[in-house]
Image (cartoon, rainbow, N blue to C red; front, top):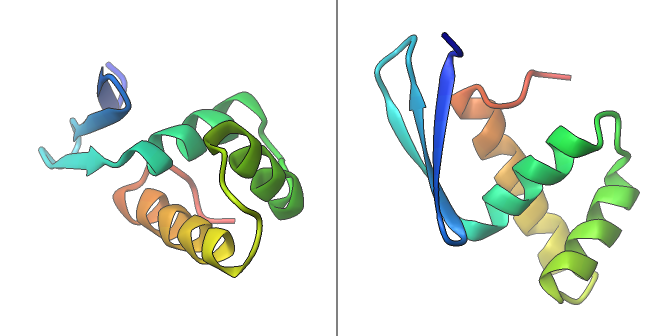
Length: 84
């Protein structure tokens, strides 16, 4: 059995961690980032920012950088991404 079970609801998702029993909410931005990283392992931060800006119709800049940093930290914290 996989450690994480993900259930998507339109643009959002919930993640159930079978190891801890915890359930986590993923906001739309985090869902897009997670899928982007799953389909492009080893992606650089610059490439990640460009892809997110394009996919979500966002302006590149400090706000996007901050949102990406927060989303990456969240995905790491719940265990969906391994520490670098």
